[in-house]
Structure formats: structure tokens, C-alpha cells
Image (cartoon, rainbow, N blue to C red; front, side, top):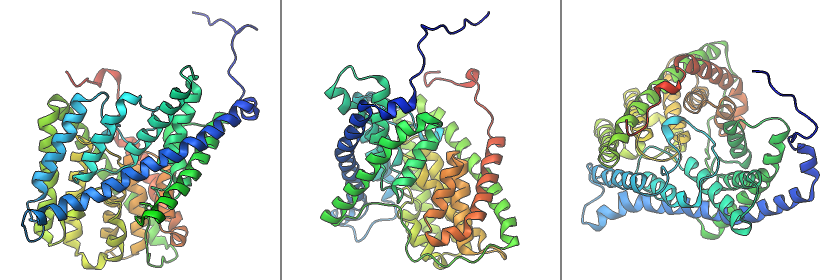
Length: 446
């Protein structure tokens, strides 16, 4: 069938440069700056609430009940309750309870206001009770939904494009400090959304403005409350040596190993998800018990705390790197196995972000390989983070940045190695992951 040619009366797409110079775009920038303040404050409050609940549930509560310290079995009832709350939230509140983490990291449009309570409660139960997921995906959804909803409150007939741009600005503000830098959050959202060309600037400029203001709000609130900024950071990073030819060979091994491990984690998570969707509430409770059992097994087998396996691993990266000498090879192997399986179970049932657990699993794998000749600790640590992030997120650029900027000046030294490992992991993961055809996609009811 022939395609009709465009005539002079056909509507042409708006010129990005014309929009950029317009008065309405300046108004949009002002709105992004204004909305960035409350959105970042809400994001800070959410992170502060999670940070308070975690020790309250795992340390203060058993003491209040008369136990001398936290009993070894304590994660079982807590993660069962967490699974129950997540299951009930996803099953009965409007919306899916947030981003489906087993699908990888994706930047979708802002959720509707009615979906925000479900996202909030599902993420809170996931993070506070110890499931192996991070806060970044819920914060992006909450920030985008709040910003887009605020614009619609001011003007109900706001164009969809404007609402989407404000939602993106809210997401930028919500994770402005979480990854250690507003630029890292911006690159994450840019690569995940797939934006490019002239239209990228239209979304990027208000997003960067909101992220900058959000970072200031995080710093101000962190200083005022004494709670800190909840940013990903490492301290006392060991000095990195100049990469060697042997380490470039190890970069291939790390990239291939991360691709195989990442594909395995995601494969198991997707299959667990199909079972969880059939009986959401009881199955999520069972997955919570699985995560707890893995954490208890690791703690009993190594004498290390169960929290090495629980949680996203965001705050555990720094002590794990600086205290790696206290972990035997067997302990790191068991940590890698238990954390990876708990990550799969959480991806397939709970609600949260996949970034920080992928970084921790990759770091554990890199530290494990650094025990063999020819691979230094910092190089293995950085390559493991980058390669596993690429395998799980399918975002090679942000994977390189996460692994290198996290290490500060030492990251620049090992960046060539990280790039090689990330490229290998990204390509091999794509080769090993079959494309999803519409005929193979099944709804939860089938």
C-alpha cells in the first residue's frame, strides 16, 4: 500500500531549538527548579525513614523483646512480614507497586498519582525488611509521579510533552545525590530512556537544573539533621597500580564471568516471577523466607553478619573493600553465592532497584578473582562492579561511570580495564539473552 506524501497542511514536529528559545521553555525551567525542592526533600525523607527502620527492626526490636543481641533466626519472621506487606500492596493497591525489577533497569513515564501509595509502601517494605534491592527505581518513580502530578494540579490541560518533561525533572531531583553525583543520576536516566538528538537537550536542561537543586537540598538537609546525604561513596580506597597486560587478559575473564553470572541471576529471577505472579501474597512471603534462609546460612557458615547478604549492599561496599582481608576465599565464595541467589529471589518478587545489588555482587566477584596472580585488588573490584552492572542493567556507559567515578582518582587509573570488562559483559550478555517475542509473553493470569 503506497504511503501518502506529506502535504503543506500536514503537522510537522516542533523544532527543538525553537522550543528552547521560547518563553514557555523558560517557564518550564522555573517550574523544574521549584518542583525540584519538595521532590528532593521527599526523596531525602524516604531514605531517612528506611535508614531508621533497618536498625530499628534488626537491632532495637530484638533488644526490646528481651533478646541479648539479634538471634540468628531473626531475619526469618522479618522477611516473611516484609514479603506479606509487599504482596498485599502489589495485589490490592492501584498499580503494580512500582517498576518490575526482574525486567532490568528502565526509565518509563511517570506513574499516575493513584499509583504512588503502592510504589511507596512496596518499596518501604522491601528496603526496610532486608530484601536485596535498592532505592533508586522507587525514587525515580516517586519523583517523576510527584512532579508530573504537581503540574497537573496547577493546570489540568497541560500538554503531555510538558508533563513528561516535568516528570523527568522530578526523577532527576529524586536521585540527585544517591549515586554520589547529580551527573551520574543524569547519565543513568539519559541512557535508560534512550533519548538522543536535539530532543535530548529539551529534557536534559530542566532535569540537570532539578538535579542540581536536589543535590543542594540533600546536602542542606543532611547537614541540618546530621543524617548525611545517603550518597554512594567509598573512603580510603587503596592505591591503584598502572594496568598490566595480564590485567587486560583478566578483564576479558571478568567480563565473561559477569555476563554468565548476570544472565543466570536474571534467568532465575524471571522464572521465579512467573510463579510469584500466580499467587502473589503467599509466594512473596516464601521468597522472603528464601532470602532470610540464605542470609542465615551465610552467617552460620562464615561467622560474618547476615547483613552482608541482606539489603542492597549500597552501604556495605565501603567496609567490604577496606576490610576484605578479613574475608577468606571460602567466605567470599559463599557470600557471592548467597547474595546472588537472594538477589534473584528479590528481583522476582519484591519491589526496588537492581543497581546496588549488582554492584555488590560484581565487587565480591572481583575481590574473589583478585586472589589469583596477575590481578590487583582495586582493578578486580572496579572491573567486577562495571561488568556485573552491565550484565544486569544493560547500560554500558553508566556501568563504566559507576565503577570508575566511585573510586575517585584511582578509578581513572583502572578505567581502561573497566571499559574492556564492561564491553565484553555487555556483548556476551546480549548474545546469551534470547529476544522476547510477543508470543512468549504471558500475563499473570495465564
